[in-house]
Length: 88
Image: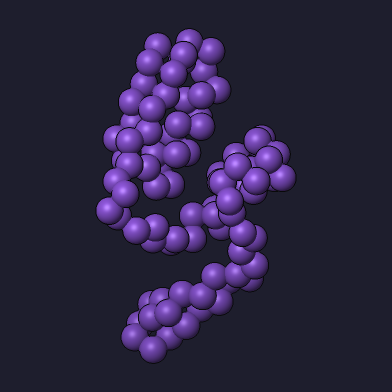
């Protein structure tokens, strides 16, 4: 089975990875825009994402994605203007 995913970002690339684990999938193409910047919304802090990284292998994942480690996230105006929440 050949699959084409329209839209990269977290959803597109995680979908591609999950689908790549299915034996009947023979090729996956992810089409993403070079005109849309990376948002970086903190998806790496979710449990599902860290599980995916563990399946790939943290070193392999970091090398192949040119990633950096995130030690915390700061949410400005979290539930009201002027409020800041730090998740470490």
